[in-house]
Image (cartoon, helix red, strand yellow):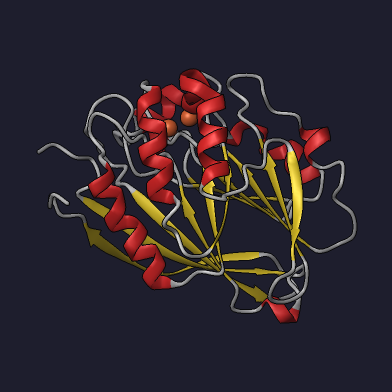
Length: 268
Ligand SMILES: [Fe+2]
Ligand SMILES: [Fe+2]
């Protein structure tokens, strides 16, 4: 009964930004990252996460990659479970999705009608002022193409970027991203204060976990939900994140509240 998803931290943020249109005030974005469905995280666990997110009724759900661990057979069950999300949902792929089977992932998302933004963008204007949504394909597997992803982005609408690997955030900020949602690091997963971060920095890691402000662009690195390796997280609890948009002259990201969702080991 080992499961890294037992207790998920739910973080609610308010993002204030001058590029947010008054019509977009109150718009809520949910981020789900690094599910790594497989040996430890099962569809019955993820089903409870999907039920929780559906109960929150966000306006948009951002899926930021790494849906499985190492087995391509886990892709379809994960994607089918995420297909039960009731909000407008967009996805990018992570390195584990490419390492297992990119074609299976793309076909799975096509079947549940979730667009995969593999170096492309679209405009979401169903509810209010237009919102640019840009997706960057995985950078670890050398599938990212920032120029192609931003090639159709015009104007000064608020620009949300889904990007699995946070290390390329400065390039996305330079192209006009306002909010970049990333994952991949798992908040170091085995996060021993004073040690883990120093080791990561020595290895060249610049963006670790949580929020960073890059000249007015916010990067948020979600710790993700699952684990591709050991079902243990130390100092890096699984996380589900919500962002509520607000207008303001200065970019600011404020944590409004934090709570926990207990995931039961029920069988369906
Ligand atoms: Fe991951
Ligand atoms: Fe990853």
